[in-house]
Figure 1 (cartoon, one colour):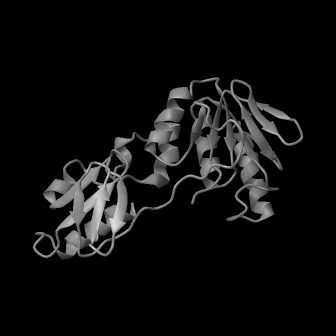
Figure 2: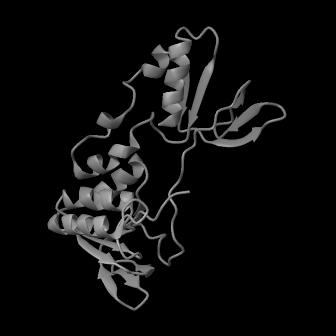
Figure 3: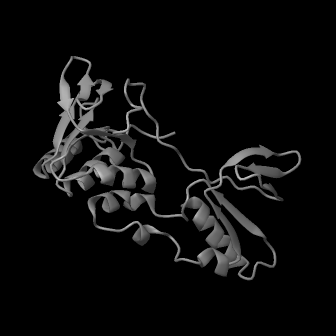
Length: 229
């Protein structure tokens, strides 16, 4: 999102591309989109195309060399070159880093299972939706903003959802305990089971999420929304 906005601002100041040759490298296989709306995509309120930040062909029309699906392997600051995963070597006068954050997974056993998905990008959304059939049981690990949004989106698709959170109330970084209680009550009315103070220790494939006290949250799939780095 930041990279897309940066490109917009450069071209607003240099619309004909006379001053700046602009190359954008993105690891994801698609142009920039609004991550804030991922939970709405998950809930079925919007399509993946609807959350794109630019219409098709925007980059070409604005003289932006957009390379999707290309990962930067290394940067040589002395030579001012970027080495890319497709073998390309891009020279630069100025290099802007707009890499955002990546999902963090806690050190639990079993997270390599195919039915465990982080919730951070559209690819994650697509993986979750393939498993989100009505009546399926999902556990969401993390009661922060992303975890609550994922749970709401899944509940909207008729999935049975349990949110597990190690803290005493939801979204403790944004809300006090009273507001957290209001949020938990609202989620409960949406059919979401909220389990606070739950210390997860392992995901057991085809069984569920195991707690430190031995309790088991039965689930077919696990969405990890435990924070970002």
